[in-house]
Image (cartoon, rainbow, N blue to C red; front, side, top):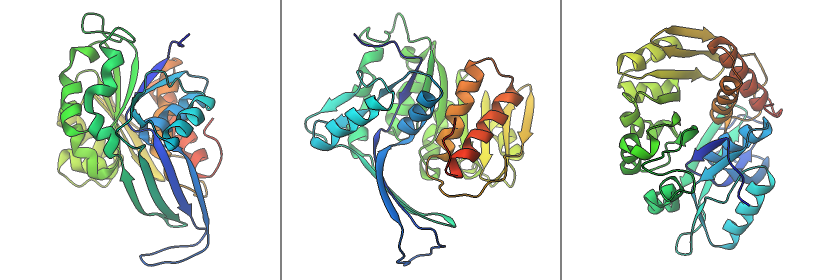
Length: 297
């Protein structure tokens, strides 16, 4: 029997292939390090952290009917996610993300998410066929949405009656895809989770602080925006005001997935009744633990 999810995570679930080196790197560097392959993608990173907090996430994504896809489905299920609603295609291969990180942070990354983009709105079928909801009875719970979806599909989601009752938590997949989230800037039910650079893309303006970026997003029509800036302060902005806090200082050992961890921890904190200040503090602490190499819980 299919379990009932506490939250839906819509977007990329793929294999993360990450090369990490303990030394500083630059273009052309050839250094020893470690290469790992784990389930990844923005939607999955959020789901994984939610599962660690005891929340039951279900993913809506596209995964191929290939050997890599079968292995990915098994791994994700074993890590606590409900995978019963995944769209699986025999014609599309399982997506992959590859990144190189040094002591000085992310050096380069390539996301091959073409299958997710090709699947389009087929991944949303459970929200309209009655499995999770329909146009007349839209899904009423939390939904974490990532910007790896196509511009066309994100535009469709922003207007769709299937999402009319949802608490939408939205994050870009990368700074280069931040502008895809424009339809959610004036969406009354959407909470935006972005970093300083992504806020700049959305506002077409350069910001130097998270507080200024949060205000800029509110000025553009956002109902709520949370802005992070690495080891610098982060801000939570609403019409009621902006809250700004400094994250704990830690030794950075990894960066890929830190923003997703922040978002997941914040969602959990608010679902447990935390105040805005408490939720921001818990999210920053979880993200700091993650980049230092600890589990986010």
